[in-house]
Length: 153
Image (cartoon, rainbow, N blue to C red; front, side, top):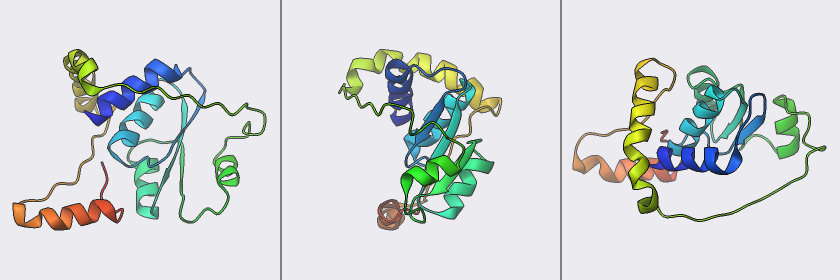
């Protein structure tokens, strides 16, 4: 569900075009990993940030991001973006938009989303990540991992 909704957000509000630069914060999470991969499939240059070097490696080598950086090790965000290949940061107007919506308003699109994403996963065009644990007794550890940036997907 998070991936479907954020992908809908991305295509509905951003209107990505081939060659455009897309930056994704928290790119190794459930939303970022899918939106980044969809942006790549649409022909965008995708850069992501993550909270560890292992996650940066995952973004670049498993998920196909063009570039990624560890935001905990980068003191200057603009420099990090420019060093990842995005040179037009100073030239571009900074815009921000916000629009809320409810999950249930788009439930009717879920089956269409699955029809699209399942073949892409099977063909290896989209990599699906998730951390799983066995047993309810391990739930506290799994939740703690989420809160201290240990989980992906």
